[in-house]
Every structure is written in structure tokens, then in C-alpha cells.
Image 1 (cartoon, rainbow, N blue to C red):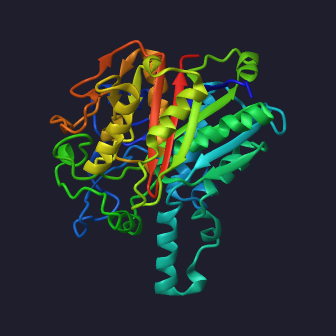
Image 2: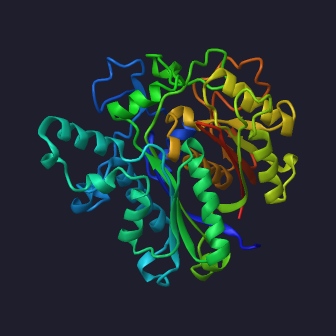
Length: 404
């Protein structure tokens, strides 16, 4: 169980940048990708803003025969995988036959593809429904398509735990490496901006109805009124130290600790389980709270949830005991892709010794006694980062990433 899980490649598709360096430079500059939804007319919906990936052209990364078979969410995953493998210097086809696995996260699945085909069913009848409807909507479609395209025949899987899914997938990747060795392509992407998917999200009651992009997602702020969705995510190449050493790879960092918990039943009187996830992840990593240099918060943007997260953080680190940031305020919440993107951002923070800012938030909620990084990036020696994520329904995940 001592096998180290090193991250050697990053592939990022985000509303404020396609590619790791484009995303990172925009994030450090405080550039937001949140604006009015452009994929359809959102004027009739209570939520009209989102983080859309406007610069993505599927044909640049995905063969035409696959574009017609896949939802936008899977196309993001295929493109991010290409970027991550290239960044890591891994040729999956040149690895041992079962040496590369794939573990991704999914939340809403291929909802845009599914809505289009269901529309054809209603308007034109069963004969008009495309054959790929049977697979494109399915939660495991991205894992399957990556595995087929990259000839990654090692252990594969998919994790479904909403916003916590990206960390859970990376935690599963580490488990696979400890048992099988080799390389795992892992992370998550999301494309939740079809009309059907937006209606489902609005029903949660957690989405913002703000019309100003600068004020629609303000976690830990007195003005917080929910969050906005976003599309995109990140795929990471995770491998054993032996594999990385054999290729003279230059790792971004190590997945040193991970834990997942589940909140108790509402009304039970028991406390939320996020604090327990933090404590267990730190114990798994063998790190004390004072060794953590930054926390990438889940940052729901819903006042009661923000306060609960701030309480968990201060319970472990003390009031204003560690810098906290939420760069997802520039992308929206990407669900299955969100915490994977935060993990990638944390690794870039370690690489460049800088903490990215939380944008928008300017009037900290007095009940959130945390050292929130806002107003601009903060130079800092970052050797250990903690990433937090919570999924709808009670999922909590915490991951400790350290310098290699």
C-alpha cells in the first residue's frame, strides 16, 4: 500500500481557457468565463448565466466518426485526455497491454445528446432516433470512449457522486495503481447546459438567479445567492513512481491523501461529515493541519452550505488558520469536472508558488471566519494543498496533493 501516485500530465477544458496554461494564466489574472448561456435562449429560465466553453472545437481533437457518436461531455473528456497524455509524454498504445487504465467521473451524463434524440422520438417517431443514443447518454460513455481510442485496456471504471466525483475518481485511480501499477487516466468533465439539464439543476434550488456575471456566484460572501453551472473539467495522468521514473517524467505532484464521507440523514441531529473527510485525508497523507499551505474550497455559494464548510475548515485549522480559495468562481460549478479542475489548479499552485484568487467575493460573511484569497493571486510557498468537494445528496471528498 506504499505505492506513490504521481500526477505527470494535465488536460484542461475550462470556460476561461482551453489547455492547462491558457486556463492557468486566465485564472491568475482573474479572468472569468461566466456569461449568458449561448447554446440556447435562456431568457425563459430563472438562471441565465453559466460558464460556457466557447473556444472548444471538437474536430480539433476528436475524429469525425466519434463526434457523431458522442455527447459534448465525452468530447471534452477525449480532448482533455489527448492533452494530458501529451503533457505526460505517455503513448498509451506503446505501454504494456494492460498497463493503462481509465477512471472518470460523471454527473449528468450525455444530456444534450439525449435531449436531442428524445425530441426526435416525440416529433418524428422511433425510427428517427439515432443508434448512438443507446450509449452516448450513459455515465460510463467517456471512460469507454477514452479506453477504446487510446487502447487503454487496464482496469476501467466510472464514479458518480456529482461535484465530489472528480476527487473520487482520482482516489480510485490511486487505488488501481496500488493494486495493478502502471498508469491511470483519471478526472472528470461535464456539459450540463442543455435546456433539460438546466431545468433539472434549477429544481435543486441552489442556482443563482442573478443577471450580472460579476455577482452571480459569490461563495462566503454576505450577498451569496447560489451558484451557476459550468461546463468542462480536467483529465490527469496518474502513475506510479516507477512508471514515471522509467520515462524520466517530471511530476506535478503526488496524491498523498484521500478520504470520502457521507453526510448523515437530515434531521438526525448529527453534524455534516466534511470535517471528518478532512481529518481522514490528512491522516492518510501523514500530514498535520499546520503543514497545509492552501485549501481549495468546495464553495457552494449557498449561505448555509458555505457556513458549514467554513466551520469544518476552522474546526481543523483554526480561525483564519490557512489560506482558502475558490477559483471555480471564474468557471461556475462543473459538477463531475469541478473537483478534478480544482485538483489540477492545486498542482499548478504547487508548481508556481502562487494561490489563485476567488473572484466576485468582496464582503466576507462574518460567519465564515476563513482567510479567503480574493482581490488577486497571492504569492506563497505551496508544498501541500487540500482540495475539498461536496456532491448533492451528501457526498464529501477531501484530497491532499503534495509537491513531488
